[in-house]
Length: 495
Image (cartoon, rainbow, N blue to C red; front, side):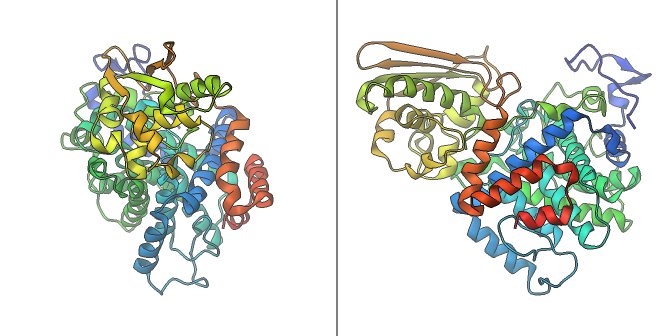
C-alpha cells in the first residue's frame, strides 16, 4: 500500500505546490507513515532491497560484536542493564532474547534491543544516511531482531523475509524523518539518530506484529514524548551518545505495548503545530510532501552508506585522503611529524562545529569520543600510520606524542560553498613540496561505493577476535542466504 502522495518539482522538496488537492500543511504525514508500516508486504522487497538488507545486517553484526573488544563502555552498560532487569528473567523464562556475543538469551526484548543498539553504536562505526545526518540501522536492526526473536520463541516466528521487510521499513521511516530534521536539528541540541530512530523502531515492531494503522499512530503519538538524545555529550566525550539508539529501541517497545493496550497517544505527532518536526528542528525547508512522497516506490534508505573508519562520518573524506598521502610517501620512508611543515583542512561551516573547532579536546583528544569527532586527530593519525578498513588501532594511540605534535600543525578553515561530507586538504611537506586533495563523497557513499569485499573485510576485522574465523564465516554465509534463514537459528549463531 502506498499513500497517494508523490514528489513534486523533482527532488527539491518544494512545499508550495499541491498534491492530490492537498497543500503541504494539510498532509496527514503521521497517518501515511503509520499506514506504510501497517500495510507493508513482503512483495515490496525488490532484489536491490534484499541485497541492501544483507549488507547492512552483516555490518551491524560486526560493529555490535566489535564493541565487546573495543568499547570501554560495554561492561558498565551490560552490568547496569543486567541489574536493572533483575533476577525475574532467567534462561528458562519465556520471551528472553539474545544480546550479540553474550551467550544464551537472558534479556527481555526491550533490554536486548537496548543493548544491541547501544553496542552497535558504541564504536561510531555503524552505517550512515547522509541527507539525515544520522545512523538509521542501529535502531532499525536492533528492534527488528529483538521482536522477531521474541515472536519466534513464543511460537509465532516471522519468516526471514518478514524480518527483512521490517528492517527496510524501519530504515525508511528513520531516514525520511532524519532528512526533514536535517543538520539544523543538531543546532537545537538533538541527536537525529535517536530522535528519529524511535519512530523507525516502532515501524519495525509494527511490521512484525502486524499492527493496524491506528495502533501504529497511537504508538507514534506516545513516542513523540519519548524521542530524545542530547548533543551535550560533546562537552566531555561522554557515553550518552552510545546509549541514545538503545534508549530509542527500548522506548519504542514501551510505546507499542501501551498502544496495544489501548493507551491513547497524541494525534498528528509528526506534523502537528507542537509536534515532532516543529519541536525538534529549526529547519525552514521541512516538506511533508517530501517526507511521505513516493513511499514504497522510492526507498530512500538505499542511499545509506557503510563506514570504513570508526569515526564521525564528517572526517572520513579527510581520513581517506590522508591515508592515500601516507601510502604514497611511506613507500620511501617512515613517516614522522618532522616530515610535514603544515596541513590545511577545509570543510563546511556545519561540519566545523562537530569536527573542526580547535578546542583543546579536539586538537588533543584524551578519550575515544573526542577523537572520533576530531578532524585533527584523524588526519594526523592517517598521515602518520595510514588508513585501513575496519582498523580500530587509532584509539590505542591517544597518547602518541607524534600525533599530538602533528595536530599542532593542522589548521581548519570553512567554506560556505561546501556541503555534505566534502573535504579539501593541503599538506606542505618539509621538503618544500605541496600536495592537495579534494573529495566530495567519502568512501561508502553510493557515488564512491564500498565494494562487497570491503564489507566482509570490515566485518571480519571486528568479528573474528570475538567469534573466531569459523563462526565468522558461518555468519557471513547465513546472512548471504538470509531468505532461507530460521530466526532462532540465526540468533543462536550470533550469541
